Image 1: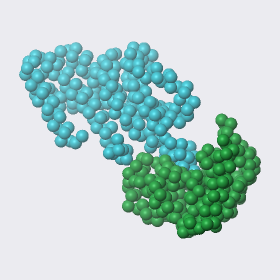
Image 2 (image 1 turned 180 degrees about the vertical axis):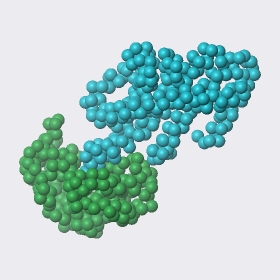
Image 3 (image 1 turned 135 degrees about the vertical axis):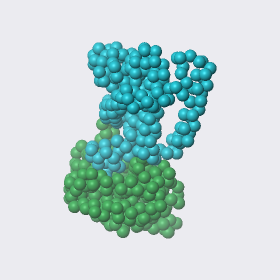
Image 4 (image 1 turned 30 degrees about the vertical axis):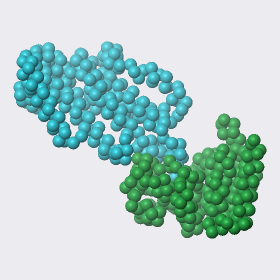
Length: 261
Length: 247
């Protein structure tokens, strides 16, 4: 589904993040991307979202070389993704409004997009995410968890096949986070999504990713991948092998910390 | 403000005016009982036309200032290098009272409507430019990234992000500067023209010692300010409902 092929990327200030970096994601897989802050996780996500462009190499999604944001890729950020001047309903409708604005041109919106059922889709996702009763509230009037639910509803209303999330639950309290992580896994399975979730929390990475991509110190050349049999299973937290996996991830990230020091 | 408060405020002003008129007791300070009938009588004629001309000048100045200040402010707020280039210039020019350019503008642009609109527009322009720029600079890159990821190009970003983001800024700028704008229009209309409320008050009435007419003109000018102020208030509630209670 996603092929990152020998991608090289550096910021204009000289920070070299990826150096002929390759990585593959199969359709329907759930991936976590983990690493310390500043390691380039968000850069990778922005590259996958088509918001940044590699200087060398290419990213292929669903058989097409990525050159701009792809209509069927959804992106959810930690916060600030919602428009403060629009109600929750209008925020959920935003992506569909943008598609209606351009029409099904194949560039900004999928060429086969039909928006006849726009209102039903909005209502469905408001209800599915349990924020129906907040439709007429503004983002500053609802909680952080409810804002993230709105961001998820907005993205899924666009019927994506790839879902990218950047530290989506970082700013939430533990209970809300657990709740939303479970919902995310449920939606991942139910919608057959290919997901990549960036996080710095090992617990989150292991809950949300059947495979974990560990990024250490940039520039990244090889993808360090850790398979995770415990994805979506909160009951195994005290299992010995699970703790061993946590230790392994911590060690991988720790190496990086030592290198940096 | 509620209509009841507006009514009470008007009533209090009239009572105070009447009391002062009794106390001063000179032709230069006529009481409202003399001015009000004259005001309503003249509003249907000559005074009404001057009022409409002044109002048209202010509205034209608002629209012209908006047409330039909104895109310019958005550009400065979003493109840092542009802001670095222009902000020293804005910093220096912003505090200059624009009325001092009246003679220059009269010579360069002429004594017609254009000179008034230009002068009033300049005041509104700088106010809007600064507020819109600050508003645009506050837009989080995350917000723009997430809207772009939904397929929005330049046009959709303008329609769904930049435009709605700067409406409150424009309204705030109008609220701050509309009083000054009308004051400057008044002065501009007293020179080299024979239309507008400034001309009516200073040249036609004051100059001819028709004091009651002069006050009718003052009432018309107050009405213009009040109506514009209410309009801005109404636009705020209509276009920026999310601000209610949050600012």
